[in-house]
Image 1 (cartoon, protein in one colour):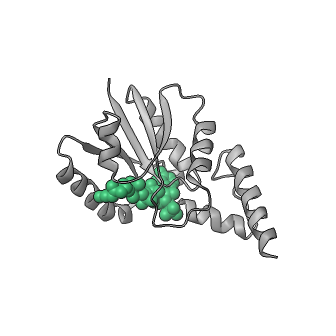
Image 2: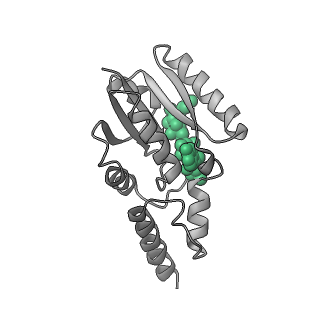
Length: 165
Ligand code: COA
């Protein structure tokens, strides 16, 4: 059985991520979305919340499962008997960082390969931080997120901004 891991912060999952997940699910028997829990970034959503959101928006994809992980990505793959890391490339600016990660992972785990999917042009400018920033300034985010995720972001922003008053 071929198993791929699609890792990231997913804070929150965007339509750009969904595009990669849906395409990857057609290429492998099983896809594990790995939600990073030892993030240097301070996330808006806890790892549990990010996992729940991903489970909700991938419920229609029977070969996709979601797990959070800590530590090295290659160890997470080994624990899950996976050999392929999937990453999305949005623009040439992603390339250097992605190449460095892929090469380093390959030195640590030569049995594991990284494959890159070019992101749908519609989402090539998108990032979770941009969506969060727009939400904090009460801009429209419905074109970037699934409706159920949009609601979670709105609720979280309301909760935080009320707490700040
Ligand atoms: N559509 C929309 N946005 C996308 C996207 C897509 N297809 N692909 C990436 N992005 C955005 C993300 O939303 C994120 O935005 P943000 O910076 O505003 O939060 C940004 O691009 C970075 O992408 P992400 O996938 O979240 O990567 P990351 O850099 O946070 O994490 C890991 C990458 C998880 C793969 C890496 O940190 C890791 O492996 N960590 C484990 C520790 C380890 O093994 N380290 C050694 C690595 S060599």
